[in-house]
Length: 400
Image (cartoon, rainbow, N blue to C red):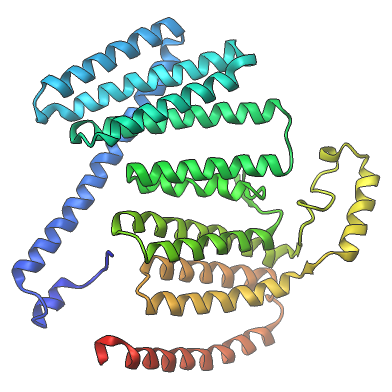
């Protein structure tokens, strides 16, 4: 597990030698430099790929150019020196991206009636071939095969999405599709060992309950029509991934912890929505839905169904969300600090600030007594956390 420590202080306290401190610093610097190089390289490949597709704007030209670049890249990787492997990978990936992306755009624009099945099937075949090539564990082609697998996965999921859209599915089948997407994206991230890909799995996972984002002029909005159920969904993800992270090798545990962090972020955003608006549990899942147009009803009919549903549904007020969210954040901050989960601790502190700022101006701006009660309540809470930490330290194996 990765930890953060002050190496200079450890040297002064004779915990580690100056040589060990130098090695730690050098490896940390190397990891950051490699991350920066890969970020620049991948960004350049993506921009060049899509730029060429839209600039050429012709299926034949895109295909021929893609084949030329793939061939050139393969020759560099096979015959060239290791010094030029980055250029070979870049050329091969741009070419493969042009072939896969160009085929997807061509099918979507000119063969829309078969685009879904063809893209889904072709993408699945390419994913399997790339995974098989990656299983060969050739270091020189690992980056190439992993990247092609991700491109093919995007093609497959896009095709599957078209099929769901064309079939006019709704309800449980759509949620199952988003779960399928989340599992595949997470699996691809774990297989390629790219944590950014693993993190992206939270997007389709959250969409299972329609939690997502919306953009319009000068605003970027997060919405969660089922705040309570989404929080429970993310809590299940967090607990499962924490359990797995403790039982896996570090290479896989890092991906599990990424899912923990992403689930925690989405859960807190859902709690923010609940603290502002409250929640009618299940209204958009087994209730009348969020929009009358989706049910094919007149507005008044839908409104009557909403009123009847809310009369018997579990309704959680925004004030309950506000209090429970604050208590949960305090507890998570303490546990994360005790377990040395720095990322989780920092995220909890960040959302605690957001929570305080929001409620200060939204809920309690004209209630000074609320600040008095909250302030005095925090003092014994901090004392209790201090005493609990001492108890934990006395029972730890290091103190035995």
